[in-house]
Length: 358
Image (cartoon, rainbow, N blue to C red; front, side, top):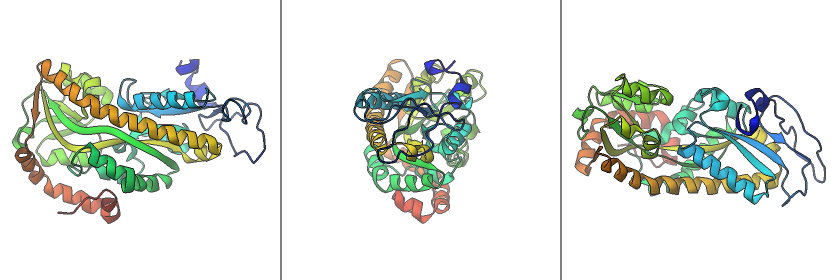
């Protein structure tokens, strides 16, 4: 059984609104179909604050304590409160509706199997690898820099690429600057990374980055990482601080290096066909609250990271923050592969994220 007592089969059999309401028209009853998650609970119109009464299904990849799930829950809370309970969001973490398979989860949001979703760009890249452009190493100075670009030309670029896939872009929030943890040694120089078996997402950017440094990158489902480290199958992983903490990596890893080598963000999206079937007033509400939830998520990540790092230190983890000189050695080592990706993603993508060719 899933949230609200429904089974997977029942979720997929929930009704989807098949057409826009025309001016003054009233849709009654429950529409039933098999392609989407939307449930039009009762006649739309002037219920509550004037919002149609509807339940939408939102899928996220992380566990219920990770930032994507927390942002989705915050969004659901904001929407329900603002609509007097007429518009509700059923959030399913861990890609429950896709059997834990994030690739299938992306296919579901593109195909209308779910209404809303939030996924990291490295996961969304399965439908368009150009979505990974912002993961090119060391293109953002800090979180404020990332915000400024993504809230302008970067977000416009995401919206354009996603529109071609039948997905509507509603906003984004920090997944985080990615750091590295391992059980073998402190990482201060490129030499220290060599021969380390590091779990990475399947993204080509991450794989080539670590291969260039002489590491042995291993693409692996996130759900398998904790056990793989315990068993010695891999030596470490790279991820944002909040995700590293929520996955309890500090319990099995001795070393953390802060180097902000790449930035990852989560894209908050809707299936376009379902989105356009909603009343304009409902769309306006969802857009407003998605933006509000994304900003909450960004603030939360930024505020919590410093506290988590201090907690790691107090628990005996060796936390290494690289100096500019130490970072320059890494940047020089991977300059060739960075340029390779700049050329691969192309002028338009790089201009959108203000990435300069060296």
